[in-house]
Every structure is written in C-alpha cells, then in structure tokens.
Image 1 (tube, rainbow, N blue to C red):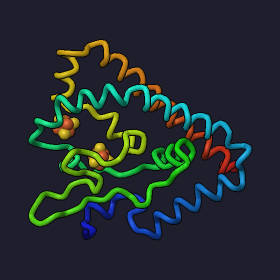
Image 2 (cartoon, rainbow, N blue to C red):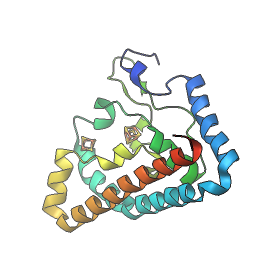
Image 3 (cartoon, rainbow, N blue to C red):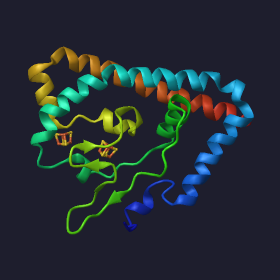
Length: 180
Ligand code: SF4
Ligand code: SF4
C-alpha cells in the first residue's frame, strides 16, 4: 500500500488524522451525551432504512455484478465522509478502524481495500452511503426490466436516508459548535 497524489485528497487519510476525527466525535459524545439524543435517533432511523432495502439491493447485485467487467469497486475511489462516520458511530455504536484506501496487488489495478473476490467485505450497513446510493447503468436497466416498483421504493428510501444524514450532521454541528 502506498499513498498517491489522488489518495492525498482523501480526508483523514493518515492514522493520526483518523484517530483525531474519532476522538473529536467521542469527545462531543462524552460532553453532550444527553443533548445528542436526536443525533442517536436519526442515526438509528438511517440504519433501519438501510436494513429495509439491503436484501433487495443484494438481489440486484447478484444478478448484475457477477457479470461485470468494469467493477466500480476497482474503478472508483471511495472514502468515508463525515456523515458516514457519524452514522456508524451513533447508529451502529462502532467506528471503522481506518479510512478506506485503495490496495494494490501485483500488477492489478488498485481496488478499494474492502473489495474481495466475492464482492464487498463490509456489511451494507457499514459501507459509505455512496456505495448504496449508486446504481450503475447495467443495474438501472436490470431494475427497469424486472423490478420497476422496486426502483421507486429504492429512490424513496435513498432520498429519506439522504435527508436523515443531513439532519443528523446539522444537529451534531449545532450541538457541538453552539456559537456557530
Ligand atoms: S454496481 Fe455495476 S459497475 Fe459496479 S460491479 Fe456491479 S455491475 Fe459492475
Ligand atoms: S466499501 Fe465495499 S461497496 Fe464500497 S467501494 Fe469498497 S468494496 Fe465497493
């Protein structure tokens, strides 16, 4: 593993930066625990929505990704953003061990460090939101052909998650930085 210019743009890339962002969130939690109820509640609502669509998305992936020749987990550069971290901390009572990076293996193209032969090693609940938000063109065609109704359901729930993520972050900032 080595950092490239591209990696340098990823937030909290080093172990020290990662530790700092974790300590910041934890400190706010320790200081304002009672006031953060709304943040905990919103993160839990996000978790429930991920659970609702997880099985259906896996079904779509199992009918598309296995035939894919341009795998997005290799092509794209993905990382946890601040909303992902708040959700994982307050909704799952966890914190990822490190920021997502790209691994290189021999001459192969660099892939997301959580990507393995059978796909993503993270549970859907613990992935960055963008990994669930994104449907590639092949998947859109598949859903349109087979599950038009499901697509409407995905869109609605993903919009709800997006709104809840914004609300969770706004509340966290309002409580942790009362003078802003
Ligand atoms: S989501 Fe689309 S681009 Fe990504 S691996 Fe699956 S089929 Fe390929
Ligand atoms: S976290 Fe998982 S789904 Fe997201 S890019 Fe990495 S391997 Fe793919």
